[in-house]
Structures are given as structure tokens and as C-alpha cells.
Length: 168
Ligand code: FEO
Image 1 (cartoon, protein in one colour):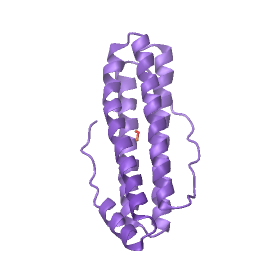
Image 2: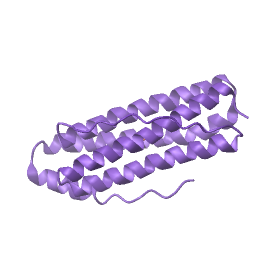
Image 3: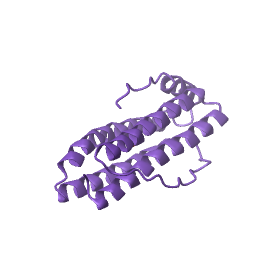
Image 4: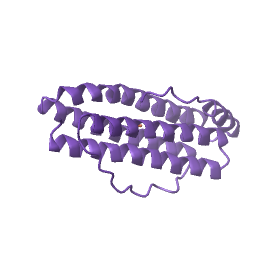
């Protein structure tokens, strides 16, 4: 059984992961609207991954005999200045999520909650990947600047993303 404080914190993280999925769906819609079908596919898979992150938390909270409490989702941003601005926002969002996971792990360590600490290590590793992927795509946009050919190729490349293997 986890503490009341940990239950609240894990449910807050569950909400953040669901919001991440919602945010990436909004970004997917932006790219669909701007005819970047490859990047829209990348965002669709990113949204699905976030749902998996949320589902893992959901299952863990139940497995440790605690209670899932779903909360309202904030309305995600609707418009961005450019495709590059979207990925800068992805990078910033992932940094925010990394900080949140780190804070959660700090709480688990403070509470000597070894089960939750061990569980959260998967998220720590995942966040390293998430930040690195977003930063790399931002660098790609910086390299191609406004080149139409470059944008076309990047759209094609990101559209080749494949779904991650299920982890739940
Ligand atoms: Fe679930 Fe992208 O953090």
C-alpha cells in the first residue's frame, strides 16, 4: 500500500500523461491541417505512447491497492507559429514532464517507498529518450530553416516512425 500523498502524486502524474497525449493529438491535428501527413503520423504515435505511459500508471496505482482518480484535462494549445515552433513546444513539454517524474521519484525516496521508486525508473529512462528525440527534431528544423525541399524530406522521414512495442 502506498501513502495518501503518493497516491495523490501518482494520480497527478497520470493526468499529466493523459494531457500529454491530448496535447500531441492537438499537434497532430495542426500538422494534418497544414498538409504534413508524415509528421502528423509521428504525432499520432507520440499521442499513443503517452496513453501507454498513462496506462502503466493506472495499472500500478491499482496493483498497489490504491485508487485511481481521474481529473479534468486542460484544453491544449490549438495553433502554433510554425512546425519548428511545435517541436520546440514538444521539447519544453518533455522537460516539464521529466521534472515532474524526478519530483515524484524524490517523494518516493523520501517516503522509502521502494516499489514506487523501482516503478518510476522506467519513466526516468523514457524521459531521457523523449527529450533526446524532441531536441534532435528541433535541430533538424534549424538545419533546414525554411527550405521547402528540406521540410518535404523531414515530413517523409518522421512519417516512417513505427509504433513502440507494448510495455503494459
Ligand atoms: Fe510520457 Fe512524453 O512523457
